[in-house]
Length: 383
Ligand code: SF4
Image 1: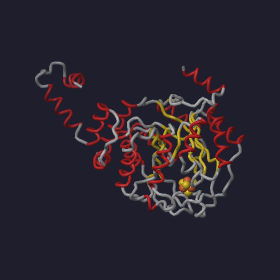
Image 2 (image 1 turned 90 degrees about the vertical axis):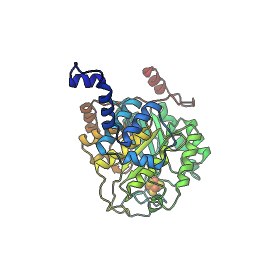
Image 3 (image 1 turned 45 degrees about the horizontal axis):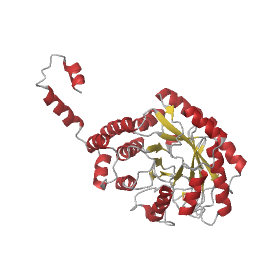
Image 4 (image 1 turned 180 degrees about the vertical axis):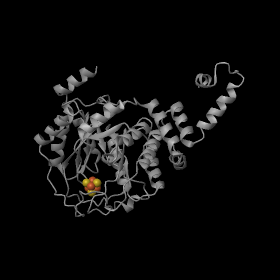
């Protein structure tokens, strides 16, 4: 900093003046909670004892200051050029018994979506192969179920898919609803990298969005996933009609879990006709930036995923999200049942912004049942 000040003011500056300038510089740049907490995060690393007020103060910081300090933490805690590319496939679509107000797959809403059975193995593996060829390093499978309990045949099929896809050298993620402990252990044994189960919103606002399962049931599933040694992927959706306080509440719950989720998806609602939230106004890019930068400062090591709703944002808008701390996206034609960004447009964006794909990470791997040839090759290629 002294060097920069010298180069701006001139080399003849008296060293007696420098402490004063230094103080002035920090009093200007460190005035917000975002600045103070970013500096602390860089100095001391992640913490889990956040108060809700502390997170609210970060969230309420002046937007450009928040963006700047989100970027600062991002550059310290992550490789800022790397962006993880995940492909999400709906392997069992529609007909879900739950009442999530944003979801076109709930059987309670007339959205014109046709319910389908579990996709067969060939179709799923073909989709995973295409995802890998398209540059994805993580393949996520979503099933529109309340839970996996009582679905033994389907669950065993999915375990098979996990093994096969992991053997192709891809990280594998599932989102199948609520999980029991035993099922989490079986998924881990099959080679699952991560399990997605979003909290969606704050505990207080949650009953306005879903009534068929509780917030605590969601947290219990996350606990089973964590105890099984599977990475936790959990985030939420903004634009549900919640207050900013609820967005802070969501981040507070995630950032005070005993271990932060490895992935935190930040979704902007895609209002689907026929759902109770069909008339919600679209989320603005500034709201996404505020969420992403706050998430980055309070959970510096997590992959913060710019998820649903990305399709509405221009490349300059997405660039601001990456700058604020996002480092993961979904690629592929669809996000479960809603439209997603064009693959070629994403590749052009990577080139334009100087982003590079994040390689798969198998460092947490403790299961050996799925050592496919391609996985071995992928490992040796990564050194
Ligand atoms: S979000 Fe999941 S659990 Fe909720 S209705 Fe949709 S498919 Fe069912």
